[in-house]
Length: 276
Ligand SMILES: Nc1nc2c(ncn2[C@@H]2O[C@H](COP(=O)(O)OP(=O)(O)OP(=O)(O)O)[C@@H](O)[C@H]2O)c(=O)[nH]1
Ligand SMILES: [Mg+2]
Image (cartoon, rainbow, N blue to C red; front, side, top):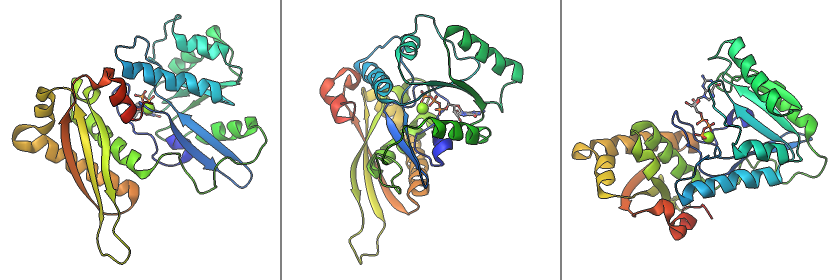
């Protein structure tokens, strides 16, 4: 979605289950508007309520879509029982298969993915591309345009997403948590933007932002902070830079860590964290 929209909307990491919400990316031209909806990957065996919420974002997307893009790559394993396959079969919307990472895999492996999927179900079109190198993405964008139902634009032309700045602030901090910390920590954290203060008119100041990072246990809080505060300091520096790049402005960033036991299974916490 980032490659197609040309903006850094969804956060990216090498770890699975990075995307937890449904995020819109809007691409408008003179006579068209494509509303992309990036979702989490389907969690095959949900361990927490949070996973069920993530899966609900996926199934919700199937219900609304005029076109479904399945993005995959060699090495992605799909169980024939995977509910995602059932959803793909059931959907009335046309389907495109997008095989990503042509820069990384040899043609034969990409071809194998195409064969595997075509044995499972029909796609109207199949694309192989590299989101990273932006190769093959224009062809996909053109094909998507060809499938758009006619109608008025849903969003103003200059609108890029349905999310406010505070959401991206929290996501960029989460992206850095995914990159900086090992196995368990990224999956135990949620980030919430506590305040986002723009300077008053005429005031010569920078944007002031405060964010809360929720963990489940004190031991996780200790890991997040690191020896002598070194880890949280690094997280703060990297997150500030990422947010400044995103906003195109200088900011002041303050991070607070809070412990909230079992938030991943707590309906009220999840609602507060945007998994409503
Ligand atoms: N080599 C290569 N790597 C890519 C390409 N596109 C994405 N990646 C990498 O693949 C990894 C996963 O990317 P994500 O965007 O987080 O993938 P996702 O499918 O959204 O995954 P989740 O949000 O975790 O469900 C990251 O390390 C990306 O940098 C590509 O075209 N080529
Ligand atoms: Mg993602």
